[in-house]
Length: 235
Image (cartoon, rainbow, N blue to C red; front, side):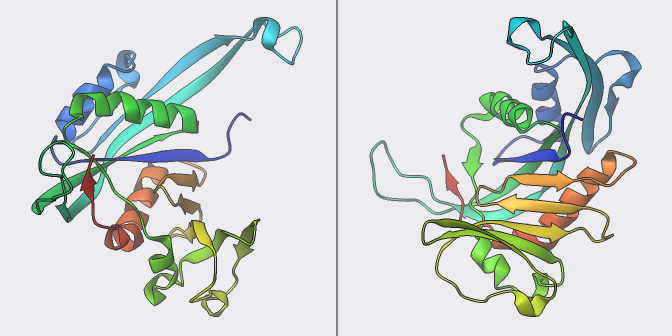
């Protein structure tokens, strides 16, 4: 098995509806035949790809490998935020602008592929892309999220700590160190989603329809992440 988790990357834009995102995505990979599926909210396709093992392979006698690649691009949610673009080149003066930020998710079985597709799509929206920062510590201190949090990681005293929690009472309200990620239980309890300090998601998807990972990511975003994004600055 090449991958156990799915990797979701967020793309936040001040402009561009889902159709615009879909059109940019189609330039990245050509959907094949009737396996390409499109709806108003989800764009996804399956495709068999091959790669040559050749001399760099650690396995002998395997000249070509094939895997089925799944990619999904979908609308995650909407943020109503105040963007702070600098006024003029090199200026330290900022102009407050109320912005509606569209957040889109990109899911695949490989983090590098999700990263690459996000960067590829963003080329069509260079002037509109924004960089949201998620405040993990605020989420950890949010009592409304405690019943869904199953673990967290942080870095302190030169050590990377991983904590697995059993009850909300075990969640610390304050500690010294930098938060790195928080792990949530999905509403149906069949999957977990880990969110790191860059708002990248790792989805431990339940068996069955791959669309579950999309639905679970949207629920986690709406219920816990959307309200804890720091003020957004236009890049």
